[in-house]
Image (cartoon, rainbow, N blue to C red; front, side):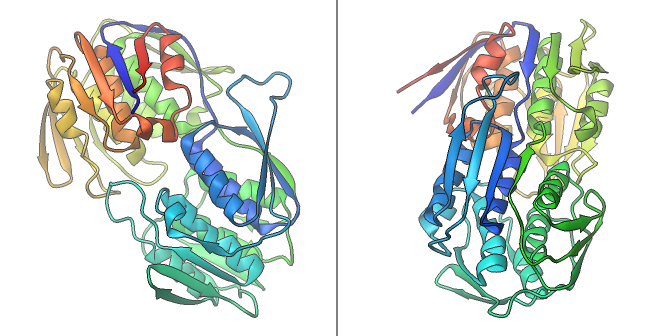
Length: 428
């Protein structure tokens, strides 16, 4: 099993190209099930989750062709030509869905286009229950008949889905994705209230509109969808990954240095950038991306609560905690989105961090130094927080279970080492 070895103490200087967003790519790929025509996606990151979703779509009869890079593109980008002309199976089995929660979303386009779907209840990462009840509620509001049998959600709409009002009791990104993909082919108009405002939801809506959908209000809490009879193919470029952007920005704040995050868009993570500025980093938006620098003034403590967009994202909570382990003072981070998302705390403590947990609140006392040690990744974001801490730790740190990293970070070692980090992957 692969692991990553890091020798800390080096500043980061240079350019890091930001990849396409994983959290936008997955629903965009699933949206290909809504049309017989080919959907072309540019700026798709090379990630384990993307490869897994290709397998899952292939199970339904979808052809995914990976095209070469286009002129002017970096080698990171890939273009997918996705054709769901012939859906051969409307069942998504447990052995595939259990490996990635987002794959459960195939239930919406299969139901909307084929009138039926049988999808396993998901497994996925270990950061809480993350139930699918709100996704099922959205489908039922559109007229779907749902039963759960032997661990499968069996959905049917033999006369087609019907437009309706969907009111989410709490903000849910997965629920909003599901509602959008189901409503675009429903008869009549649907209104989604308390919709998620995350940029990835807007990216999906933009793509669906290019395919012939009639969606307005994406990016706000009220989205209106006028159902259409069919969707067409389209070409769409995935937006840059705001979580990758924030992760590398925090790595620069941790180590010091000067890095241009190429292609990054500040409006996608302004709350996180504001927090980094409070912590002492210098953030400058340019035509090329976002430049992050930190002088020798040290890291200032911050107080943060995770919130749905446009608040501070839960997917950057672990990375910020790693940064705060070296702050000059005491920081607090309150996690309001997912329970059980402090699994990185014990591993950070192995490096010398001082963190006290009280329910969903973490209090971090900054220390003068961290010391390298063997650590173990527990989930995607937790694993990269260990990398950030290791970059500033004295001596050598080995991060085990890096398959978590490969799910969401493209060429992490190459990008960091190009900026001066001492980091390498060890196999076996």
